[in-house]
Image 1 (cartoon, chains in turn orange, green):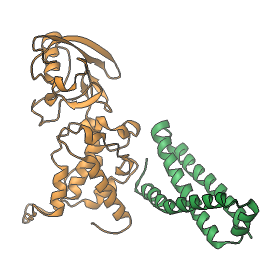
Image 2 (cartoon, rainbow over the protein chains, first blue to last red):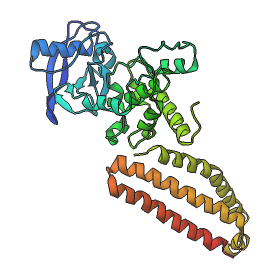
Image 3 (spheres, rainbow over the protein chains, first blue to last red):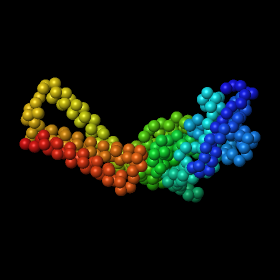
Image 4 (cartoon, rainbow over the protein chains, first blue to last red):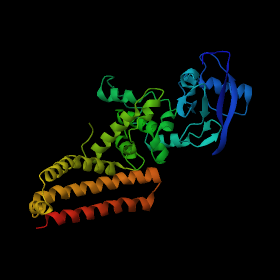
Length: 243
Length: 110
């Protein structure tokens, strides 16, 4: 696979909506070639009508996630060498989201669920108030820290089998975001957020398969966040107050 | 398809079942090893408040736990939702509860 002069055959999903099939392309191999490099080569040299998303190319923006050999990956930081199976590379749109065209999925359901999970900050003070001081070593701050750094790439959402089988399930990213805000002392909607993640699509539906943990490119642990939400929602239901 | 209440009920029923399952298995092994006849077993359970509470609680916990667990499987695997899912949940829970309590009554009634 380190042959920088060879060719490889790549299967790329082509089609609109539910209709489509894999198309085969011969792509030149390069050293340190990423899956995004492969997709870009196809679009630039083989078929300019190929649709796909990317922006930063350095693993910050979260827009280039695709299924690579059946697994969700951030393609800009995924080397072909690491994921090709016997030289085979199959690139498809992210699982669990509606396909718009080719490798582009509609991210609306993913972000709608962020809102549904109250994954938005609710200020507890006005601009006239003094900014509260948060001790960076406090337990809440340290817990919140563990759930930040999500780049919204939807890799976890595509990896999650519960999302596949339960269309209402909010998914690992939205719940992870909700957990970081539950631990944000400046946020003023803790109760509403715990209620938002307690419904039929809420955190209690997680089966702890750990696929989100396995594939999260930022190495976050959404299942730990979900476990935290389960604990705090249970405490709220039992009237035990916050930990 | 679990909200926080169903989630908590399933966890609590599991907690209740752990010692009861162990007790149940211990009793079964004791009864078989000792070669107790049905009449001897009934002689010990009849009129016993302890065994009525032990197996009565067991039946309640099993009914709750199984109904909620099957509800999740039916929804996620078979796509059953709405009224059908509610009917399955209550139906399974109700049948297990009725059959279980009937059996408990049969062995503890004096």
